[in-house]
Length: 465
Image 1 (cartoon, rainbow, N blue to C red):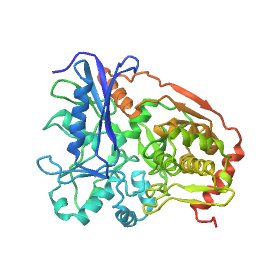
Image 2 (image 1 turned 90 degrees about the horizontal axis):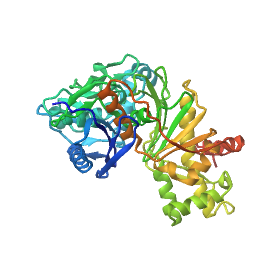
Image 3 (image 1 turned 45 degrees about the vertical axis):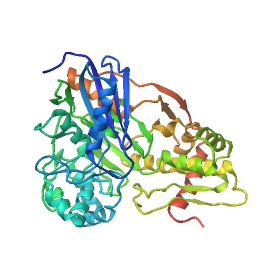
Image 4 (image 1 turned 60 degrees about the vertical axis):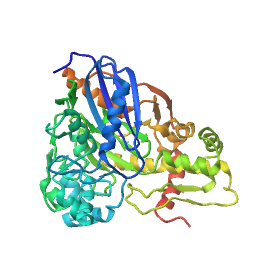
């Protein structure tokens, strides 16, 4: 039974937690919110996500909610058997065990250019297709039981609609699998078979504003999307505005009017949740780098910011290569972080803090460069995510990125994007919400970016002594 018009709910099922926002569809105002944590790790029973979602919805209440949308962490592999039950824990985007399988798949199709032209993205360990290859190779008994593959948001949306509902996904999330093409807008069963050894059932790709089903108590369920596409839908960047998200991972992305095909593998040629495209660069190391720096110095986040802001640009030559947990972009899954250039002059707490912030920002600046090299304009960076709340990040970002910066107001943008999509599906037209831009800073000296990033590039590329 359908519900009369009311509030809408947006869900962000991320690596760390399920977050739910209840939103007024007329203006995007958040009226209630709730959160449930997920366990740490790079693989998890997907039923944990369902329990977290049920708990968060129970806490926030849905009696006055008419529609719901789910945005989820991209790339996670959820394998199901004939009965629709998981055959193993879901492998998450940050699980790097499939790195050798990614390399093998790239070679088997004919190299990076062939993949870029086929689907828009060159596989790395995060991509779902590589996790399917790993499973078929390392766990053949598990692979034999698998009949369907879904992504985290697909699975949650399917569960919300109730069995035996049709499984659906959207362009944004499907474009991160390695077997759906942003070039043709269709699945590539041949690439799914290349990855897994045989084909599997895959969700239907729904339209951006489609109602794909209803919950048992009558809520309309929208198609949902991946987390980055959800954030982009919430923010609605203008032409030339690049979103720089500083969370567990770092991402650089924006909307574009045509698919990108970067054979270098730096830019993933994703689709967005709006019918367009979302060129994106993702790094494994972002806000957590700042936390490690604060821990090394024995200070809280505010103390860390004070130290970083007190040092001069370039930190007297001290550079952090921030690959603390391996890296996705560039594709160095076994890499480690390191400080380079420690001298007597550079050995101060202030320089150590400054080098930590600059190193993290340089990794993201490389992402901005990679996106613009694909013909995507960048005239301003919009900072979001937990790391954007750092005063040091806000102060240093313009001079490291080489772009004016606006820090957006704190918000669960992924969940807000899911709510926006739910409102769009419910009412048949996209809401005209806008988001608050809290602070803005201009580039103070273009020479700083040139100097800091040149030194960082020497370390990154192995040219530093």
